[in-house]
Length: 166
Image (tube, rainbow, N blue to C red; front, side, top):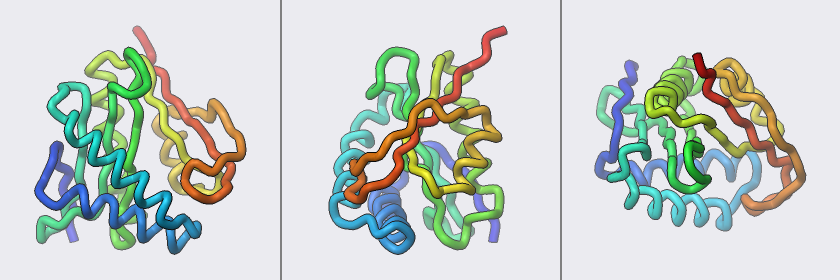
């Protein structure tokens, strides 16, 4: 199976992104309805803002054109020159094949070329493969605390990557 990365909305991608999040996090971390509803609500709101040139959505598509991964940069919700990396997910058959690295590289390149000073993301302790990927792209742990914004108590982590100047 080959995977290609495309930028922008594709019909059906929003539902698929929500489905991948809901299924994976329910099975792996017991997140339920509050999490899936939050993903659906915030992703739908963001999709309406894709017309803004700094906001971007990347999709990983398989040979059949089906969405098997996603990553978004929201450049409007955290303040000037700060990008919010969101909805980074891969389907089960796409993990460990470099697809996530390809998506992340596209996002970092976009942010650097756009002159955004910082990329932030929220995750939680225990997602070790994702953390390794973030750290390999220059992200560092900036904050950690217990929280339940996803419907289950976890050790929430904020990572950030500052653009190097010069």
